[in-house]
Image 1 (cartoon, rainbow, N blue to C red):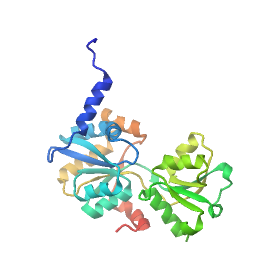
Image 2 (cartoon, rainbow, N blue to C red):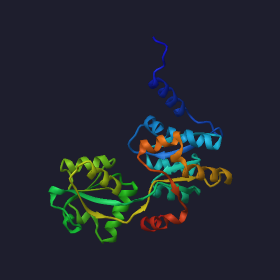
Image 3 (cartoon, rainbow, N blue to C red):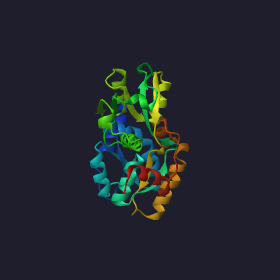
Amino acid sequence: MNGRVSPRLVLGILLCFYLLPARAGDILLLGVQDYNQSPILVVREYMGLTRYLGRELGRQVRVESVRDYDEYLKKAAARRFAFLFAPPSMIMQAHRLAGYEPIAKIPGLLSASFMSLASSGIAFPEDMKGKRIGFTDKESMITELGLAQLAKMNIDPAKYFKSVTYYHDADGVLSALQYHLIDIGVANSGLFNAWTAKGYDINLVLQGKGVPHLTFAVRDDLPKGMKERVAKALLKADRDPDAEKFFKYSSFPNFEPATLRDYDGLVSILHLK
């Protein structure tokens, strides 16, 4: 032994600490919903942001990841989380269930993109009839937006397509396209841009209406001063050395202000009441 402590060991100790059960009143929990990653990876991704928010608030902030959609909303309804960071459809559900208030969001819009391989010959919406289509998880916002877009076009998926398949995540949709298990894949527009940038030969067949991006919300019963400090902190987070690590890890640029009115269109499209 040379007396030096391995950086991996230090990171492991920190991750274990962040995964310890939270004691009520001591810690502000940030609830995130993630289909893909293990809790340890989620903690690692958010560590810079939670550390920064903790400094700004003078309280420890810890992230808690929930994979299951229903479980996430159940915990939100029980007001387990002080803060939420999730797709806007889930934030609006949490607002309906427990009064969570959106205060910041990632810039840009999310929409459902219907894609096909260039070699498939599917280039226009009418070409999709009788083909095999694949969506992400049934409860994901992009799937809901995709189905809403089809309903707007008076298309019944069960009758219009040869088959309808749901995958655990967007990577499953891409793999199914590549292995010719489906003819059309539905994922968010940002992934379409990322996949084409990586050289995947994919056509954009149809794109639905855009809605706000991932959203940060606060519990409505938190002190007003704390809500204001969180909102101000998020808007300058990209300039902080700790929080900047979160943006590098996630590839998001920064946060911008959000209010309930920003989500009127989403609530109307998905009939969220």
